[in-house]
Each structure stands twice: as structure tokens, then as C-alpha cells.
Length: 61
Image (cartoon, rainbow, N blue to C red):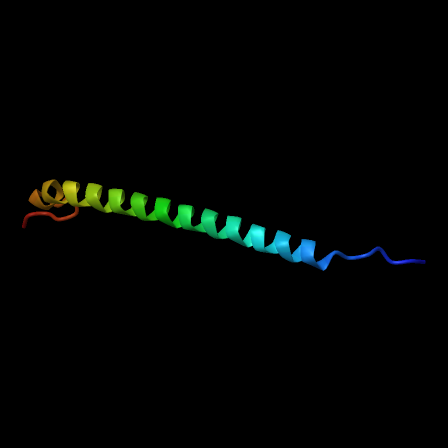
């Protein structure tokens, strides 16, 4: 039985290209996550002054 020839240059090139794509996707995902986190924190800060006026869990004694 004869083994097929392996084109190592092609494999290495494909690996490099895939690494580039993976890195770009990761960067885009991290950027999106950071934007969403900033929006969430801004929304929480906007709601905070209204919630401190009367805390729902506390009773006046």
C-alpha cells in the first residue's frame, strides 16, 4: 500500500490562514462583548439614582 504525498507547505499555509481568521473573529467577539458590557453598565448607572430613592427590600420601622 502506498501512502499519499503530504503537501506540508499547503498544510502550513492553510494553518496560518485559519489562525488569521480565528484571531480576527476573536477580536470582533471581544469588541462586541466590551460594547455590550459598557452599554449594560451605563444602563445600570442610569437606573441607579431612581432605585436609591426607595429600596424595595427595606421596611421603615
